[in-house]
Image: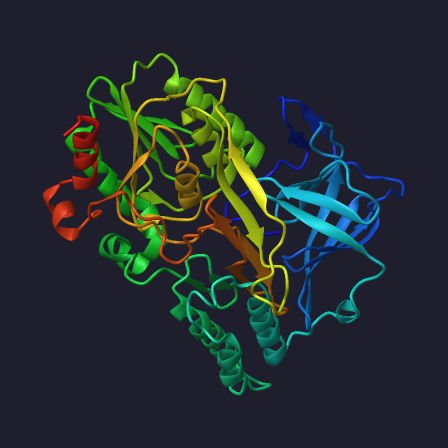
Length: 475
């Protein structure tokens, strides 16, 4: 599925589609059609069983098979979709029109790319008997999924086979769950990858990776409370520094308080994007998109702006298409935001799926075409980074000030273990038109200015924003 880790929700009785139409009532009966049967994704490790109004997914490697999500088919209409499904995790995806009896294309709401599927004559033999729940089998699902999908073994200079061999010898038949959790966490923690996690509900244990040294601000303001406490209160302390020092009047809040807008002086706009998710209290990508369109119309209508500062220094990600929409309000011409591709071959790390390009096209709705400065930092994560990448082709150029972003771009490939635990890893890369990726290092600034240092926070200073204003003033 390759969905980004986000709080996605869709109402169980209606579906909002392009153009604002609302279709009610899940479809409960369908005759056999061309979708019925077994399909396998190109990359992503999925096998799908379509049967009338129901779908069942399997998460498959060469040696394991774990039942995944199920989904229910809904009535739908529109030029971009043939049929639509809502999953048990409340995500929405649809089958695009076209294709043939052996090849089709899926699209998950909130993703900037498609997933291609090919028909199989039957379930793979490995799915004849789902992988059982034993310590060694859970270890096998975890390690094999990483082996076949993770994108950064070479980047991290890691020999995964050696790590697996070393740790497999530690797995015993009666191994306590807590010890197995510790083992799996220890295997991936050194990668420092913010798109990796493990969640064991019954143990009340959760691990999320992070690039070493980039969580300093979180630790200083939230301590053991981690990212959750930082999001509740810590980041607001940092926002307050900027608000007090530079902004004229209170910020206006949009999209469930995930977007804030105000002015620095009379003609410089300040757009703070806290995340690219949870844009609507009703939940769901489509309702969030409507909220975003309305917010951008209001922000850019009637403002005699001469310059714009966009602040994504604290942004934990979300849905890429929201970033593309904002980029379209700033664009002066068509350009490539990025091209996505996923690992394709379970063994060969150099085999990739077909590239999906995302194009930024100028919107006909209200926007801003003048000078833009973007503030970035190590807590610019995931969709915050793909948004940053989507601005790189804009003319006139968007100047980045601050520090490197976190360095994680892929949608998160979520997986289950037979024991009920969840884990995730990145399986895609985002390429510039010059075929450069920024995984690991993040996107660098044009002008480097330290972000939220201990001394600046204590003194109530915001040097990156001060430098942005100097640049826009021509200094």
